[in-house]
Length: 320
Image 1 (tube, one colour):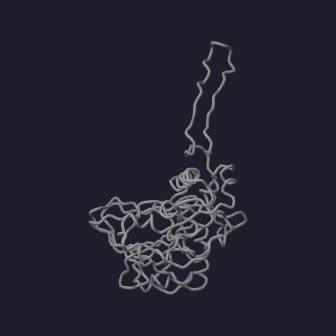
Image 2 (image 1 turned 60 degrees about the vertical axis):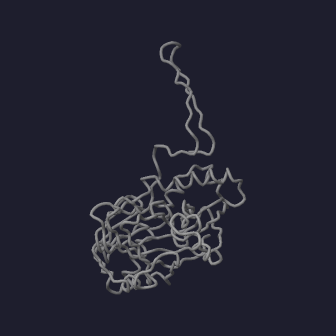
Image 3 (image 1 turned 120 degrees about the vertical axis):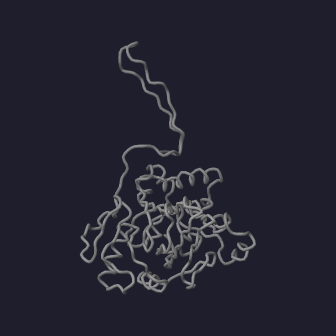
């Protein structure tokens, strides 16, 4: 994978006429190619400690684990909270089957990780701190790889999503580990991105499904912001790609064509299956993800059936 065109040819070492020489070939630049990938779920030096207060069932090598033995409708003890925090940092998204929490219980669980934030661009449920996604005859627009609210100066730390009603088929959600995506970039691309910053804007992401006159009312409240293209996780210290298709518009100081080309390459990294986990929901299930370290994609393959979810977001810090 490279930002320069890959052109290669091979010469036969066999006697002339015995084996034909391999013809010249070219691979298009900026592609995703096969081969080994570095897959590690923990930062260097982060210990591989057991979990003693609940069960952890991995769903892949780097991202996603089901948690058993924790009741989200009850307050967390300090020991359970600490182990869940460690599991979140290690697995990036945690799944809890068959929980059925109320909106108040969902909020109480999320508050173990900080203050909550709201997004006025999203519909709220019975509780103003809980966003509600009710999809039936109207298709959803979350079927693009994205990180939530990177258009804020302080993007969300994480989110907790509860599926109240699920369709008879489809409606899965996928997450991608953006530390793994960064780890596997070519050395020359990593060098090119050192110190680079990108602009994030809410308008392109929401313009797909929100009337322009409604967006105008929020332009002053959410002006474009700049974040590092490669973010350092504030707890683990891991470096992660921090650009996404919904909200990242350009790399600061780069010519338009150069910026677009690099962003296309970086956006592609979330599409690599080795960096992903895919979760099939049942009614009552809950997912809790680290928004700093992941992107996600809601698969829109269930229309006209109904899918109802509630989400609580946890306020985050300034990326660096």
